[in-house]
Image (tube, rainbow, N blue to C red; front, side):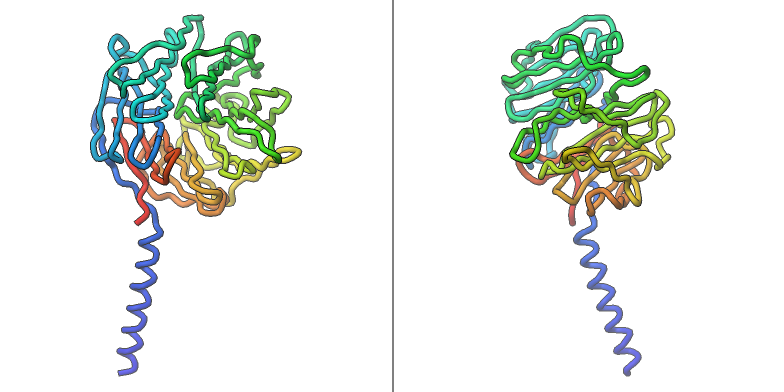
Length: 346
């Protein structure tokens, strides 16, 4: 009898432990997939509202947390690739067409109509990413004559100004990846940390650069030296004390070495590499809170619960971009083949 009781108690304990693990282990729920749209732009306004943008001039919107997605093709731009999007509501959004010519368009009526707010047909112009913080939006583009393009708007994208007329000097073979629209982050000033716009580069050189003070630039301890290597994405922690950067080599997307680094801000910048890095190449990273991060790429989706020091793979599905709601807790992902998913905490 005692042996049976022991087995019974062990079984109950195992069941309870498994139940706790099931409640805390995150998963991925695919909401839609199977079309020919490659999605790299994602902006999550709230738990219910998100916008996506991608190839073939396509933009998508949901106002019910992804249960239904409204697809729209921007008239006259059916062959354009909208690599990034910033949304303010279910009515107001801004999309970025990368090149030929580089364009930024805005809607105020939920995507029923779009108007051009920026257009540049300069040879070699290629926009890579936008980031919005309040009414302020900034955009970065690949170098022309060795200097990166950088422009700002202080009125929700209505007008744009190239504040750095001479551009931001980059090293030979150094550029930006338009992989997820997340290699640019605006940091507001406070008593402890100065205002900054941090951008991360890749290619033959990989750096973190403060666009507002270019003397603030640091070589990153990431895989670099080839056109396919370097940093792809940066996010700033809620406290502003830390940042996390991911990348790697998209041509060898299973390689884990040199694909991530944690940044600590202070009088100087301090880099710490993960003990267990994410699984393979990553194109996007996002803080869910000060200690929890999510990262995705063609190699799958990874989660860290200790500030980026140890990473666990939670899905082998390929995604280009991941974003948490600006107002809320919902987390959505998007990628090739029109795939859109949300993060589940059971």
